Length: 103
Image 1 (cartoon, rainbow, N blue to C red):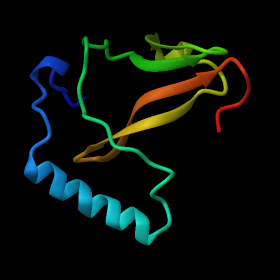
Image 2: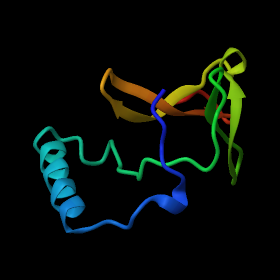
Image 3: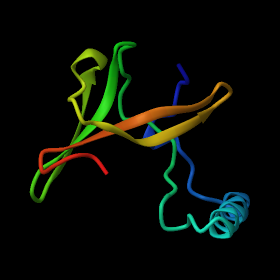
């Protein structure tokens, strides 16, 4: 598993970061996907156990993200955020809506 830096150790965006993000935006725009994906800083607030994942639960007007056992991930939860790794994309955060199926 890839170890992510703690949020307090993640530096602010610099000129090089912004130049790369401009290129990512251009690539997404060429494929008409600039409104489907967003960019976030890869970080963690606490370590997860090997058998845990982060899951975001949606209520009527609230979101709660908490660790859940992989075996207890709610039916209908879908990956909502991924991390680039040497082995390809890895789901980083899952999303479950109490209001209906994951889009």
